[in-house]
Amino acid sequence: MATVFKKPHALKDLSLHYCPGCTHGIIHRIIAEVIDELEIEGTTIGVSPVGCAYNNYEYFHVDMVQAAHGRAPAVATGIKRVHPDNYVFTYQGDGDLAAIGTAEIIHAATRGEKITTVFVNNAIYGMTSGQMAPTTLMNQVTTTSPFGRKPEIHGFPIKVCELLSQLEGAVYVERTSVHDVKNIRNTKEAIKKAFKVQQANKGFSIVEVLSTCPTNWGLNPIDSLKWLESNMLPFYPLGNFKGKDLEV
Image 1 (cartoon, helix red, strand yellow):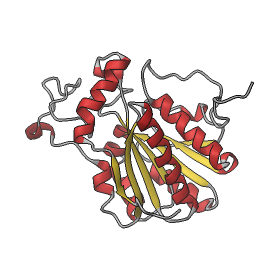
Image 2: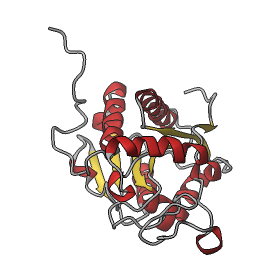
Image 3: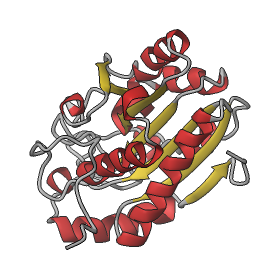
């Protein structure tokens, strides 16, 4: 009998530590499938964040480095400059990338560092009990915005793709989601293109992936997917923000 579906080799055969319904696992699998299909397992180096995915270095069959909170783009920059022929990617959440790591991601992008960033946006701080994140939506209730996010108190959410797409060094910027099968497939294509941009030595690439946090949203896994679709997509529109026609 022919095998039509199996775990990608680049993903270790381990149980993931994430909460039930969390879509980090889906994104991990997508990255591993891309690594397999591009046949780059032996030449890929990942940088782990601080946050829910802090220990994803346990899950991939590639070299991984743990960075301090928010510093993954800086660490990846050093790795890529020392090993220019390797594929280097960062895996970061919205608190890691868009809060404490804002300077690192902006300057890595504007320098055109030839690295790939996978940015997971679930609109909340997941690991540290559900505080408001830079990406938390207006009126969204969190542990630190119990009456909802208000612009006069908390400011407005940061739209990372729209921000980074203005920088000349960023050559491929895309926002996707993993709330249904169609968008999971689109996310895979975007991440594969981001790696190909690095392969072609073009410049900085980032894929923002809208994700869920059932635990801190206070929803079951199915309802969290619906919440993402109903609430996040209108504010964070999916699509390409830069590099749509880039040849790689």
